[in-house]
Amino acid sequence: MTKLIIQIPCFNEAEHIAETVRALPSSIDGIDCIEVLVIDDGSHDDTSKAAREAGVQHIVRHRRNRGLAAAFQSGVDRALIEGADIIVNTDADGQYVGEDIAALVAPVAEGKADITIGDRGVRNNAHFGFVKRRLQRLGSAVVRRLSRTDITDAVSGFRAFSRDAAQRIFITTDFSYTTDMLIQAGRKRLQISSVPIRTNPVVRPSRLFSSIPSFISQTGVTIARAYTTYNPLRVFVGTGLLIALVGALPILRFLWFYVNGDGSGHIQSLVIGGALLILGVLIAMLGILGDLISANRKLLEANLRQLRKVDEQLHHITHSLPAEPDHFSAGNSAPNSAPTLASHKS
Image 1 (cartoon, rainbow, N blue to C red):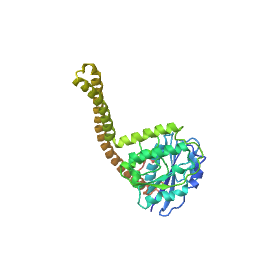
Image 2: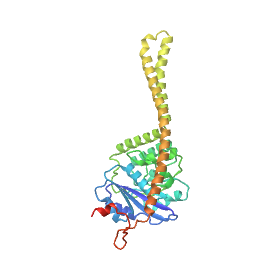
Image 3: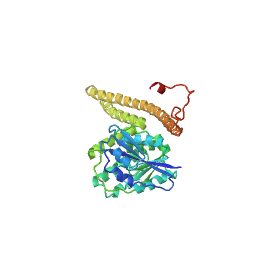
Image 4: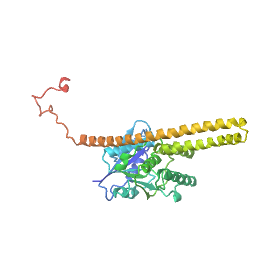
């Protein structure tokens, strides 16, 4: 039996969550069971209550707002425990058309992809302004380059992924999971594909960021951090060699004048060049250390993946055990049984 769980991270979405849930498909070819999971990220407008009244099967609630990335990871962890074979992530504001979930999950259900990303057609999307279109295309191009994938809409939150892919992804950023997840998936050689989707008109401003400059800066930091995490040797050694090359220029300048009998007046070039060379070597050595840490991270992620599997198995075992009979209930007494702590409380 193939089970699909659609997870919806929410923050103060009591007004929109019921409509979003109603728009989700109740049946999809090749999927035997569809359930909905809402992650209430510290809302204070009864989002959880509204979700429960809308018929949502699973609700995870954070006591305070932790951010979209943390909400996404909490949803994935819960979906795995609930036995999801495929997980779909969508937004609570109804930006994405619920009917397109069938097309989104098809490559994963057929075993053709580990992850599918909903392509909103940024170039010609009528719901995006000119500036947003340009920024989205630029950001997607950068992520494609860094993740070695062929994704046209890197920051789309409408995505589906298999159980195996979900077990391999560990979000570490505090801002948004979208680019971090793609860079991880690309570096772990998961099969990623894009699926054309439709979008609905925007009903409210984004709660992820307050302005476009804020979004650019935070996304840039997330991309740089994720890429450095998985490619420390290239980042640090490359940076160190660049600084060392710059440091070689003033040293060559000093040597030129020294050979021509005028070296005493240009000692500052030697000092600056030597300092830059030392700095470059130190940064390159950080790359070697970072690469060793990266190797250790792979081992830790392998352990975390196994722990996830153990946690899922324990959850299923616990819920499959029959309830213990109450030997001391009326009509089913056991006089020869040893007294329990409860029997001494009366």
